[in-house]
Amino acid sequence: MKDVKKVLMVCTKYDISGDSPWLTNEFAESLVERGVHVVVCFVDWSTKNKSAFFEQRRGLDVLVVAKKNYRLGLLGKAMKWFGGSGKAYKELVRKCDVSSFDVVVSFSPSSTDRGLVNRLVDKYKIKSFHVLWDFFPLHHNQIGLIPSGWIYDLARKIESRMLSKHDVIGLMSPANVVFFDKAWPEFKNKKKVVFPIWGKSGDAYMCDVAAIRSELGFAREDYVFVYGGQLNAGRGVELIFEAAKKAPSGVKFLIIGWGVNFEKFKKYAEDFPNVLVVPPRPREDYKKLISSCDCGLVLTDSKTSVPTFPSKTFDYFDVGLPILAHVESTTDYGEVISQEAKAGFFSVGSDFDVFYNNISMISRDLKKSKKMGMNGKGYLRRELQVDRAVDRFFNSIKF
Image (cartoon, rainbow, N blue to C red; front, side, top):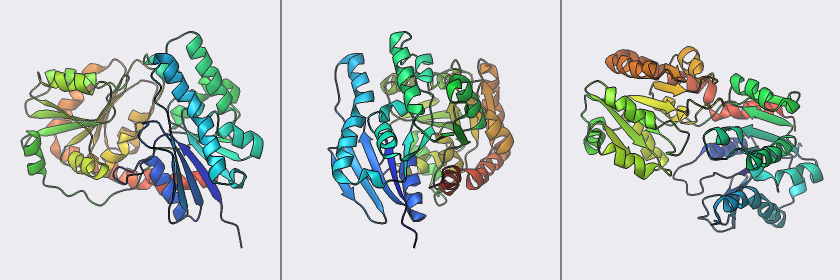
């Protein structure tokens, strides 16, 4: 009888409350459903949880490693980024036989796992699969989070060293693969696979649209655009307020999220009768809320050269919303939603007038808008289910 395979998943985002399961939760649970024993090493960046080990049913164990909240400015941030994985390794060794893992799965930035993944790979020769969602530190430098100079150079050096440790790197789209080869030509021959975002489709999100809109202050006949996500630098949320100035009558904008700019955007919205900013909600409540809207917004910083594929796409498609996107010119995201999925419109770079025109166009044709929403739901079921992600994982790394 074949031994049960064992996977270690290292991540800095994982929901242990059960209220808002994230991509890492869904991937781990789907692996378990395939007969894999999964150990999740969750290095808690929020610093809310104490270190604990949870024995869970169905072959899933979770180790929560507390992270100190260093209050030393830039130095403290560096310590938080690069210092937690060493502690995680020590905790992991205490709790289980680390040599027993067949594969370690990690998520970008690879630098955050420096004290853990490289030890498993070097000492125990464990295979490594890395999911690269953001191009650290390139993207962070372009949006102003990491300054140029020695800090950027050091961060890039650490990231490059860690990327060299992985057997397979999963990237969100073909454009991401092309960009990776240009950004890190030294890894051109490393195995790379297209590894899109994933999730689990929910049931039909039936809700009382009129009641939810009344609670928000929107009319039932309004056409409501919704943006759900982080309210931090490099997210392009400012564009919503510019669009609100030009939007036709009856068009409203709902912004749901949290981040350093939440209070700033909430104050901005006080001067806009057609914009509302609200804090995040548990996942199921969030999905019911966005299902009462008409179109999902995907926005990125158009000045960056780094291609992205925002994860909010899954939730929009899951509840049957079309997507209106304004993204960087280097990504193929727009082609995916408009041509492959036939589920929305997009604009790029400095083409802001196209973005404003798309708002007017999609809000005027409710029938076409709903048809594109259904197309997106179909595309999700074909391409973005978590089972498809697990299939790609199994096909790309043999263990």
